[in-house]
Length: 116
Image: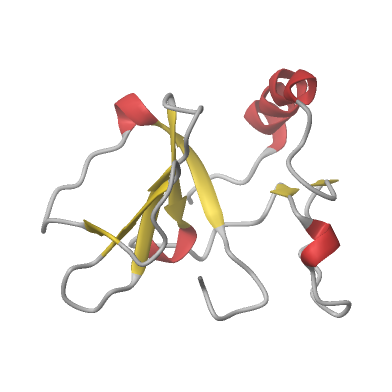
């Protein structure tokens, strides 16, 4: 969907996420994961993943200041181009197993990238 080697997202707690301008619409992929796009330019803005209603995946480039952003976890590396690397602290061939979410979240809370 991104026409790129990467699809960068920031996992945001749903209660802390709000669309403040415009009316996003569902993009071309329809299914249990709802991918929202800009109604005007069709850019991919954010995703509400099925089964993870407590979170929203926001495209990192949608931030006003995204210079501070660094990938902390990378997933679906089995689909990665051989030259595409992120430097993420954690890497998984598919989605990580549920039992690692809590320890990874705790680690991110102490050493993850923050806005300046």
